[in-house]
Image (tube, rainbow, N blue to C red; front, side, top):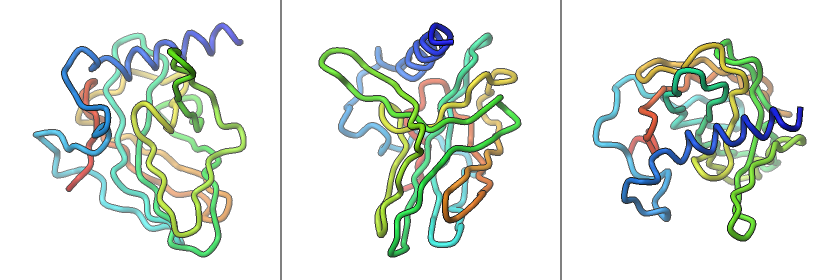
Length: 176
């Protein structure tokens, strides 16, 4: 199982970083909108005190078994909430993960306790950092498709969000 997870993590990192050969500024990663955006991009979704916006994923290569999910979650409540995980018909399971550098090595791990969304704060799940992992995807994610994902929060409960599938090298699908 550990070997399978390492293979999945390596495949995800390779897919996520496939745009590395292109010149880009890491400080702006996840903040620049691509030149062409679909008018079908996600409208913000309200769930109690949470606002979910800018949900996207990337197209995957044939044979890929994992994909990443990214979005912004704002919490206007006086108490934190917690993103626990989710489900989607596009994958066997949805997990909350983080990627971070440990010296010269990129490490990815599942956040088994979920991800806290602080009171009055915003958390952005973006390439190269916090993200969702779509594990054992049923078929390749195709650019232009919309993927329904039901996210589960400790307090807000289950919230359905549509994730737009962008190009495999899309850094962000955020609207300005």
